Length: 425
Image (cartoon, rainbow, N blue to C red):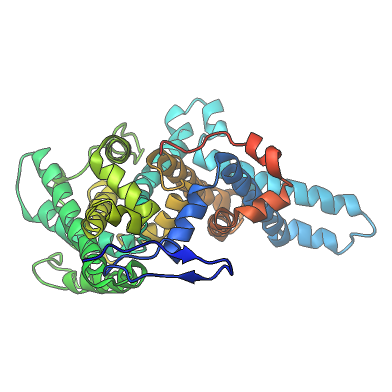
């Protein structure tokens, strides 16, 4: 059997593709191009994309502020009133956002340390599943796959983790680990199916993950209405409460929701970093992502590597949903996943697909989510602004040329702003 060759480009610029093995995409595929674009972005451009998103968010905040709208009615009479209203609305909103994500200064001044650090604890609590779900997207991304199925993988994993959590009686510690393991296995099986279809039939992972998302979500809804999974005496789709031995203990208590799951998230980042940079498996994953055809020519089993990458992704997705099932919620419901699986795409792209980049991006997005609630409560600014910020960040990350054009970064100037080539890649 002849080995596939890479596409050749003639003088006219047209490309001709030789026949590839089933499931092997040409090096210039859409997923491969996205991977190259994201990995080529330096840290400076990433930070500037965030700054640009905040700037546009400030415009939206000012445009929706009642004081600004009122002052526009007499702008030509007293224009400085409008400028003052714009500044006050943006400053108060972003001040509340960052205080709600990091530290409540007012509570600290009053001496209530627990209440002062409540925002930071919420940031860590919200970030824990985002970090793990971000890894579920980042690992296949390094292999040249675009995993949009973290949502479905988490939904399917919740079934396994919840069933072990409330259905078994085991010693404390052992029960928690068993529930986490069940969630990871269920998630890995659901994601592994995507890798298997990709390797054996060439089915594109974007299509299969989207379809499997629907199947898993509706399957979870069906399971929650079955007698063997539904809480006794309830008609709504909700599981029994997990046994205390299967839940994450709180780290501090005293009204703070942060639990030991955040340590599992950080530990998972370190494990994935070690796997990707120190093992043969990680080397093969990144080699296949760079050029699947060349990797096959070098003797690598590309299909097997795709399956392995998706198994890792599913395991991370299973651990991500456990942050809710075994941590904050302690039950399984139809909305247990929320939008975490889709937010994970933002986290993975913002983190440039590297483990420590995902950690930083997960903390950032988690902080925006936690702070957005405080911003809405104290200033009345819609929390939808946070969702707009997320979308803008992804937009600018996907279009680095736009960011460079806005900030007039050219040639050596852009290169000199490269703070780091990669975030732990």
